[in-house]
Length: 128
Image (cartoon, rainbow, N blue to C red; front, side, top):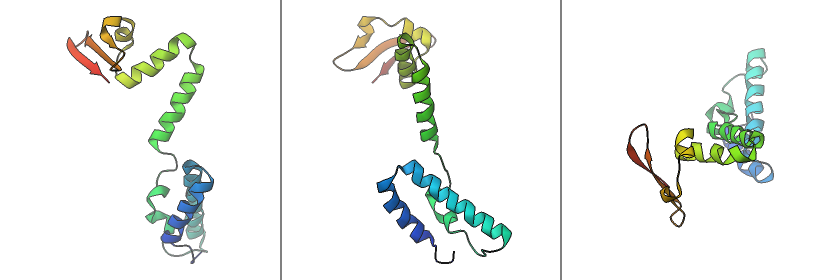
């Protein structure tokens, strides 16, 4: 265990991420961190945990990774006629009522923009 250093962990991650996903690499290093913590608690390892210095060990699953998983699950459960709203709403910040009231004159297809008046604030909203 003394031979494992933060530098070796970083090198392992750079090498391993080529073979598997970044999320899997994070999980493997998180497991290694846990092993060091348990070894320190039980006595076989004394000293610092080399994973404690690695930024990628701190969060096993990032917030963006969790959000991506939720989005995929949501879209898989949506009926086809609701799927467009489930994509448009979070990406534009529009409420469902604003989405339902969209008209074609508010949609600029060549520019890929929406130019609408938000009812609640009565201010123009330009979404790219």
